[in-house]
Image (cartoon, rainbow, N blue to C red; front, side, top):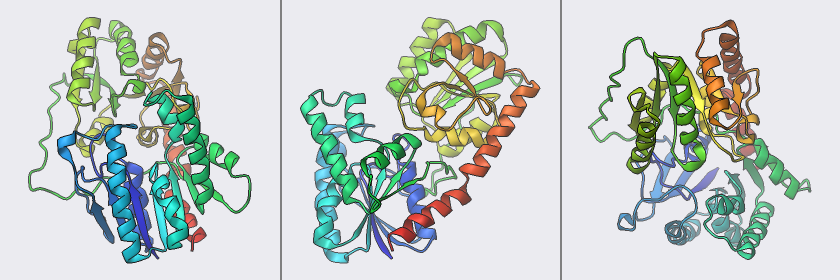
Length: 389
């Protein structure tokens, strides 16, 4: 089987990294699919055996590609479309695997080139337009709702990354001709970056050897609730003298913003901001953590980091929102109200090495092993590939 994978994102980049694209492609190649991966020009090179990565020009002078909808992405998608049509004309693929808005580029070409179409639904585009306030026109949002429904019906198979999207897709596709698969972004093994001969230096933390760490690792977009976590930690710091808050991630502007907030709250000396770090280093921070935290404010898509946090064997404090409760329960995590007081109570409880804390962490690791591990992920991908043959 020869497949074209289309990823309208920088591939591979520390910020906004399409991890699901990498792991979907990696596993499909391991299962014997011959793959061309078409993506943006920006991003780090990765090594995936059996995969040819094809990039459009980077257009770096237009600035970096940011998370969410943007005018820059509209331009890049237009260039991506032209390159896609050229590849389809030359190679006549058996399957096209379209990630996110790439479905709008690939679906019109399906009757022309006769390929099977997989729609990898990472989010609902109309919902993204509302969340990021890219457009405010109800007419335009309704247009994208119609386009999304057309795209869903054009696909032979749909992959949804969380239960909420799975429900949304199955509701739209009531007939049996379409199949919707739920494959969570639950794999987090090391990404095989092509080395430039200069490995990134490890960043020393300069922490007291007795310090217990509350660790957050991820982006610092507003919906991630970093301000909420800092305000909660201020309360924790009043009760626990040896606790430090380590925040890994964020671009320089975001880091400076939250450093200023930490100073305003009087906890700057108790907080460590690393900025964006290599994935292997972020995973090292998880291993030395006393407690992990996911302070996300809202949303419906389960964050990728939740699966890694489950597997870590460390206690997890997360806000009681739909994005989390699709996977997390009170049996495996400390689910708290999305406010500083609620999160502080959860952190203080999780920081004490009680039998309940250890039991929840152990149940979390078992949940990951039985429902979200690499082997289960592979079996789900095998089902998708068998369905389009």
